[in-house]
Length: 281
Image 1 (spheres, rainbow, N blue to C red):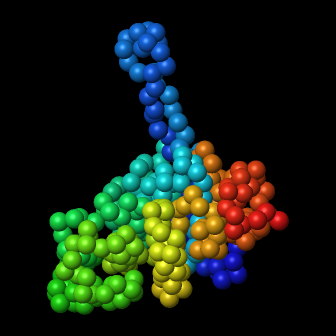
Image 2 (image 1 turned 180 degrees about the vertical axis):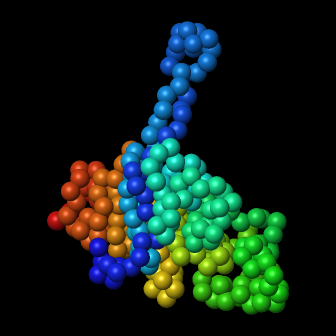
Image 3 (image 1 turned 90 degrees about the vertical axis):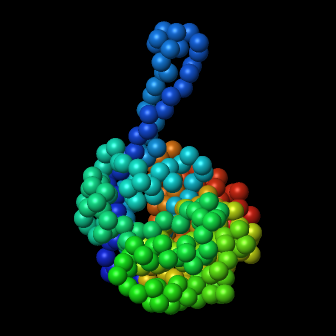
């Protein structure tokens, strides 16, 4: 663990977290007939006993191919899907089976930025209207003049001009729309940003800009970053610590330097071998 984080308080952690989905497949017309035209069903462990922790101010990357359980994990952390078993703790409070209403105070601490930034911004609303939505929730009884000033300051943080506020999302570039998504989550004043493949659809130069923005948010505001990606090189650049997942399980968990410099699991070595800029020692 990085020395900077040794004395930091744990923000979020899981203990043997498991998420199971019921999947349906038709194996043959004969099996379909035998089961009275009902689909043959079986269970799939999307998460299989995942235990990890993230401290205040930490940048932790989770890497793995599609289907490794990365997105299921973050959706469970944000209580967008229920956990089958195990526990989720926020500030050491067990929120695993907490009711939606009771979870509200924790929701402002944890915000998700999604990969599909095109569909997360309402195309019929101006950027100012989009930014006002979370502020109206977070600061109900505050005058609109203060909210307008707050929006401009948030745009400054993500390096967008306030002259764009009258525009609609389809009038922006992909990088600008992702910055708006980040600014909107910052309006809730979170302690943790969960980034779900947020640079995978962007050009390399724009990717670097967004990654540097996340680094500055972490450095200047102390916001923890949980970064989900299939790209181990991008994750190594941003995150001081890393977790490698496959088939719903954690294969490696430690500092990014150690994992990329001396990977222990064959799957991690395979991921690294696909990236020319990273070499196995």
